[in-house]
Length: 152
Image 1 (cartoon, rainbow, N blue to C red):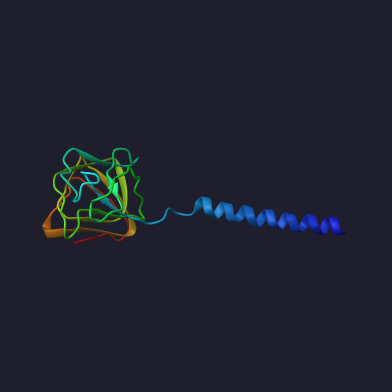
Image 2 (image 1 turned 60 degrees about the vertical axis):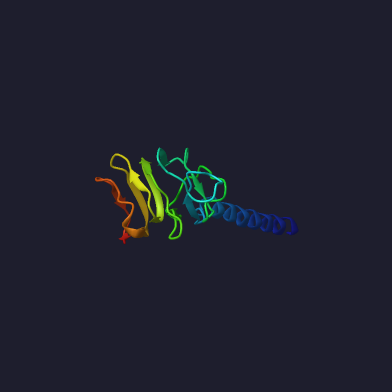
């Protein structure tokens, strides 16, 4: 009798642990604020000419530093991320090529000019795109996906 009780208990523990591991594996990525920074750790965001935002994250110039003073990394953005091309205080210049479908929760553009041949941006269901000082028009043919995208 004791042995079957121990077996049942260890089975419950294993099932609980397995369920916890499964939940961790399928949890969505954490949301982050990323800033496009064409000049790396130099303060500011630099000139974005000849830079590319792509779906795989290779060649991307994202940083979590709102001042543009930290090193950048190749980040594969998700529909949980808020993305900034400059800030209200510090703009970015140049053309940023969008290659392939890319993802964002929201995009704030303070000066960069998105370019590309009919790029697609997949927003979250409540995504938004904001242009500061009327900068950053997307090229003709850009596709935006998401349920309730707001543009300002």
